[in-house]
Image 1 (cartoon, rainbow, N blue to C red):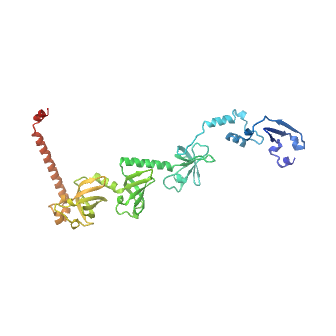
Image 2 (cartoon, rainbow, N blue to C red; image 1 turned 90 degrees about the vertical axis):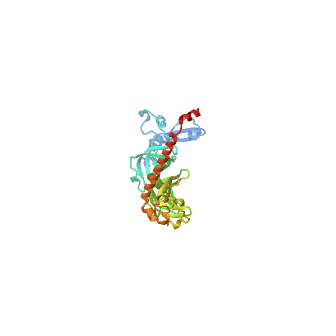
Length: 395
């Protein structure tokens, strides 16, 4: 009576089962309702003997579900017989759709909910998977809802196994990372130019950003006058080194600029440049960011023993392109070809500068005349040969 007064709606009004394990058998006693009205008569029923292992075996997940959703008396919510199937049928049916995920797999999922540090994603697993904010993109993401929306279907890479709740960890960033390296290798193979943003300047050069990957721009391959003011500037580049295993990406602005100019300039064209450096063997001329070499033998028809007596660092000159080296990114130049009179680079350098275009035209006319003369001589030589005699001698 004490229990029925305190707990009028509990299962204890329906009966009490006391199980006593004796040896390898279980004795089950179910008291009649008289037990709670003062009666002490008990009815007993002996169950079939069961083993200790069977008595203590861990329940399956479906047995656990059945226990969780059963009524206090042991009756399952909704009778299995009336439903036309039982839990074993349900477990068998569900096993056909049990998906196994592996770390590194790429799956398609749908964004279902935003959390404080990420988003929940439905990929068809036992539970919603989790996409951390840091794994959303290779670029920095401050507000998740600016780059994702509820209901978005995306590709994700699985980066961890299921935890105790059956939840997987996902990443979009790692898919972007792999695809960015794949694109870089393709661009390098095709030897194409790219455009990238300067992120920062350091002693050795600069760091640039290309599709989320960071590349190193050596100072020797950077634009002239590289300073902090250029941070944020987008410049043309070419890849010098691509090594995903070492996470190493080296780029060059000079090579990109040179190759662009090389497409526009041909040997025989006149260019204007600034003398940037003088060496015993020649002078380096800056032509719009591209370095050209004016060898000492191409400065003048007259002999030159001291280049600095003819050229000054910082002075502007005009020169003719005589050859180009694509791999080194340099032009070979000549002022000797532009001299109105032999030795004018020493005697009257201003005349070379002002008459450069006219002298270049005369130079091309002279080359054409020389080429035509060689062709005519070759034709006359062939015409003068006794081909029949040569054929007979060969036979």
